[in-house]
Length: 335
Length: 237
Image 1 (spheres, chains in turn yellow, red):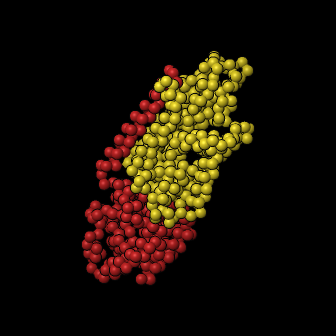
Image 2 (cartoon, rainbow over the protein chains, first blue to last red):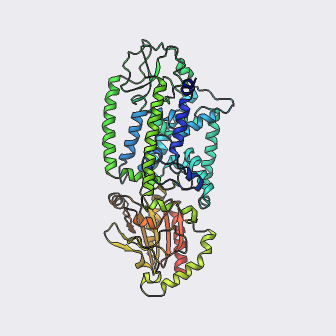
Image 3 (cartoon, chains in turn red, blue):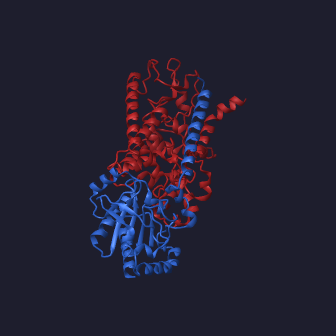
């Protein structure tokens, strides 16, 4: 009974634990002051605004944008190395287990209302997050220079930093304007969207999920399909609420909900080398040959080691910390 | 390994990593009088507004008084006997508000010369804290260049980089070719005495006394008008 309960709610507990651990500066919620300890030099895996009064780590997406802003003067080895490391280790398992904003969206979706089911339209809309990644996260900081996603879109920044800090600090309220109003309106729209549509922000808008999705085929931890057992009934795909075409494709957040739906117990969590089972007679390999994946992993490991070594030796940790210990006015929509 | 075992493994690993990190952070935050410790106090004392707050207005009298005191001759720091000095570490670190005496410091500029604030106590000093990763900071930089090009007499402009490597600041300055003074503050020595929980953070200092404080910035044109207005007001006194 106890084991069944844990098995059923394990992901929820991990999501809750991650959300609490990312935001364990509880005093900050009372005082309105953000955490300024050394841990702010570390990037948390999931989307969690570093200007949240409770946050004890940096947001990987915010750190990436600020690093790109100054990339003309200093290459962002440390942030890129961290993102590659997280991606290679966990891929979108982070979305399914370690993202507080993903957790919130799942809870909102439990509110009983008519729900929008996945379809070709939602599958097409899932490409939007790659456009946002390209335009708002990469191009705008490099060209404008503006951390476009933080400033104009990020609902986590508005919810976790903008609203609480403007409520707690009167002097910040004086700085709010049209941009803040826009961000609050967008937040409300996104939250309502998440009630009606499962993980709407993750599926259609989140550029961090878009980054991690590139690593799903090669990540060390995650969902594995035993192709020797798989009967290609597609029960897993039908059961999944995300816009997946195959288990563990770019849209798969590796939540493991499909494990129970498999009639032949072919899906499980795994670690290590990519699956080497032969492909189905009529099916297609989702992500290329295992040998190619192994080569890609080796290249990524070399890149990660090089980037992190260069980043740490060039004060990268301190750079991320220096940004994250200050209130991000852009995140709050008052930049 | 079974599904539940993996979940347990991830759960324990996550908890261990984050708790270890948290413990390190706690130790780091508590070990010294680093800049960030002081930044925390800002909301308690309520400063760094947009410069138009009632609080600012109420302190106008004391600001003028202190300014007159500064202008009345003698050695510069003799006018402010309790003046804090960031370079020597003397004096109290506190969250600054309009009307306070600006803490003294000597900064090394990117051209190799130095800038000592107290040497400019007879002037209006526009002091800005920025970083190259800060979008609003980058956007408002042309405002300082325009003010510099205005050639205002009795006005000094200084932008202090917040805790970035010299190499990064040098690359920035060489690329942008700004003509106003830009200073390093690699260790945050100056920033410690000018605590703020956000940048850009700009102070208009009139004869050694803080006349206006700005937190954040909009576009360069807007900021130019803001700063120009504040400087003109100080010069008219």
